Length: 230
Length: 121
Image 1 (cartoon, rainbow over the protein chains, first blue to last red):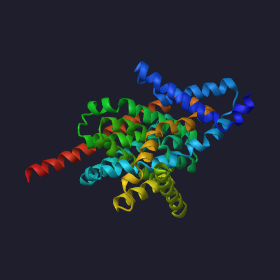
Image 2 (image 1 turned 90 degrees about the vertical axis):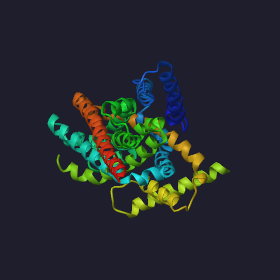
Image 3 (image 1 turned 60 degrees about the horizontal axis):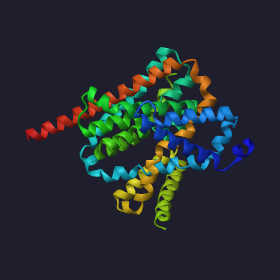
Image 4 (image 1 turned 120 degrees about the vertical axis):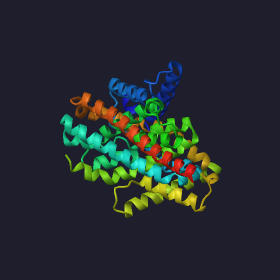
């Protein structure tokens, strides 16, 4: 039975989508921001794999056709960008400067704290690209000797933090302008934060998508330089 | 058939992104090249949004669930994290809010400046 589940072509995807559905229902029922569907799903799947003895490698093999969608899904972020092109064009200098400052702040803050806490090079390099989307962060981290899964986890944690608290943080830091809000959310918490930005408004969502792309590209270029610090 | 055509267009741009990533020796992944190419094609009116909208909306809406499987990998790399867990949590929390604040304040200051100039003119 377990052998069949481990080698099944559809078990992993069916399990993931079922758990995803339950996690979404759970969040809606409880209204708790802490029970983010990604967190709950990951915890539940790890527990199921550990309890059943199905190896993670078999689960990942089963998820491959699904994970394959990550690249085209990221490509499709071009559509919301294009639909808000007029807002973007008019405010491009402010958005670009904001994203550049934010990306530098992120890299130097993470790098500085890693040195301060005395983390080793592998862990530091894994944490550096934590504010950009997985499609960029994970390959860049691995190319420089980081651990892919640690990077992905840091990226997810960052995204969920942004998703949960960006509205409160914008209020706290008095960021009222929808364009500034979108820039801040996209630069600090990539795609997962952008989901929230889309709920705040179409302008916030589009600017957030644009910002996460620029922040990702900047980070990809700056990472090799930052990694020499360790 | 409409959705098949839309999926085909999206896969085509993803493939072009993959080809660029292979040709250009920069640390930019296929997804970002594809995104830039699709954005360019939309701006140059080579394709219309209607030619991909249904499928692209479906894909961007499902992005969050695509993050689940890569994160499950953590069960194999957890020992690298466990020793430094408090430090890692502090780093993630502090840097996320600092980045949000710096980006938002800088952008808003520049936008306000521009607005002020326009009001004076």
